[in-house]
Length: 432
Ligand code: PMP
Image 1 (cartoon, rainbow, N blue to C red):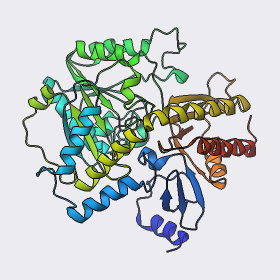
Image 2 (cartoon, rainbow, N blue to C red; image 1 turned 90 degrees about the vertical axis):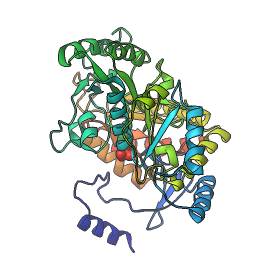
Image 3 (spheres, helix red, strand yellow; image 1 turned 180 degrees about the vertical axis):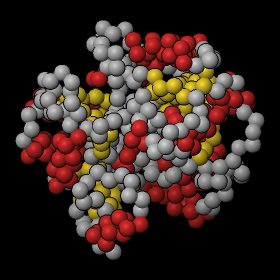
Image 4 (cartoon, rainbow, N blue to C red; image 1 turned 135 degrees about the horizontal axis):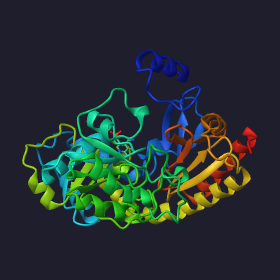
């Protein structure tokens, strides 16, 4: 099939709302390491890793071997039956999880992992109400849409759960108009008043991402989660940390929560867990697990192929020191982005992120007080980087934040190559 036929059929048969970043969508066909190529044979450096899923590189040999071997043996059974891959994965995950997260349940998507976590929190606490963050993204189900703090992903008003959306720790656009560093993390302290004024005063928990991914890699101040957790627990709630984007070494530590002084009561993960095979997990403490007595099953959850892939991912991360690599390559990438910002100080308003999860927020003119988002420059940058063989991501409420999240296996020369393509693209755009 030719790429123009794929594009035409995609347009004809898929929902028109299915996201696409380019004027002419890229039809990806093959991948190897940090590179992918399209159906016409054009090669790209992949700085978005299938939206952070391809954690250990495209066509990773160890993952592929593990999946192939499992495919010959047994491809599926559902969570009804214990299998070797499920228990191997559960044991490995628990051994690298923070705190006392000793119990696991597997599903097929991040959405379901968050649903599972929320229901566990409600049952374990006996409370119903939840806190989530503005600018957060939790998934596509009705409950996950209720938790999501972004109307771009909410087609109908969702009222399945009593969710209150707290201020986002979004320093570049501080919701309280304070200065980072001297603000006393007032947005975290505001949770106390939010609970006391808008809930019954007893909550099931707060769900939050260590870095708000879809929101545009909004990176909270280091003190945020410690303050938030203390307040949430004071009102009977549990801390549900959504590591769907930040997990598996992405931020330069194994888990995003480890960048903050917080121990999750529940943790969800997906995306990078199985290098792109569908899998998600919810981890919780033994006490929370004990509290949940309803019969629990997921047809595709814990699929042996995905679990075998995930075990291989964890082995790759450990043996190839990929957490350290994410920290080192991330620092190089960050330095390059800050250099780029100095070259284009009007347009690149903010550079933020951790490890190999870095973003640039594009504005019309940084020197003008309201920092008007610049989605036009963002689209231009997409077209220019595409021409130069670089795939990037975007996010943010106004679609004006460039998200970069290459595979954790990225090399130093690939960092330099990606930065060169970005520099040339900005130069071609002719922006200040
Ligand atoms: N949580 C976060 C932080 C996410 O970024 C996403 C997906 N973008 C989800 C949950 C939902 O995951 P999925 O698309 O696998 O359902």
